[in-house]
Length: 359
Image (cartoon, rainbow, N blue to C red; front, side, top):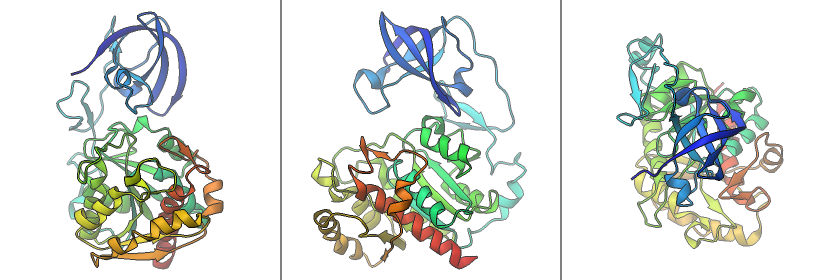
């Protein structure tokens, strides 16, 4: 069930591509709301608004936002555009987009005939926080790389929720593709397969990064987490003739034992869900001995499938410290949990190396 609220806009907060923060008076309390501008339209101080406070009222990890659904006293200006692919289907705020692979798209003939992605390196990661680490390290090693970020639909559906993606896109570091039910990217795709094909044949990317948006779901069970999708992504990459690079979710600081060393998320997704090969970049650069020992203790479990190949890389530390986007994971920064970002960044190194070797 949704928890509905009404409020009055007090003042603007931060804004970025596709999203605007507003401070809202809700029953005499000042609270922070988020509006997706393509859905809600323009707002102003004094507007009465309808809000969804379900997750914020329960203290869930949605950035502490109430979500602004619509102004109460007027209908948002009607938007129209090309395309007939509906995303967030059958939700009250479903949106219509022009997908790169639909018949009305100018790219439809390319994707109709495309069969593969020409060995393009594709980095997959469990958490959205891995994205800036992968991109920063890859571009540090190869500044001219064209990188496509494929935002999947197992967490935040609007890519506008991600300030990270917005900043990287604004800098020209990535071109964004929203796949499946997610929406708001530079390119829209019906599923992960056509997103990968579009990355290669429409964007002309040298490499791609497949990561869900913010809002990873986990239940503390072997199978109950949204990151199982990384294993399915590896299968898709190999089906299309790409080079799958599987980054490990690791931590030297997480208080939960199941995520210390190599997270059980990575172990399950890569050894049980992924049924095809992948390269697994690993590193020892700058990682404390105790943390490294805990990580390495799980390597035999990865290798037991016979499908995964560990590739040792370095050249990560300086690139992470120079990241143009703040590095944060589960509330921890680079100095708090260096290993988490180093193992994500290792995927950027390996992808840059593989790209250079195929040019």
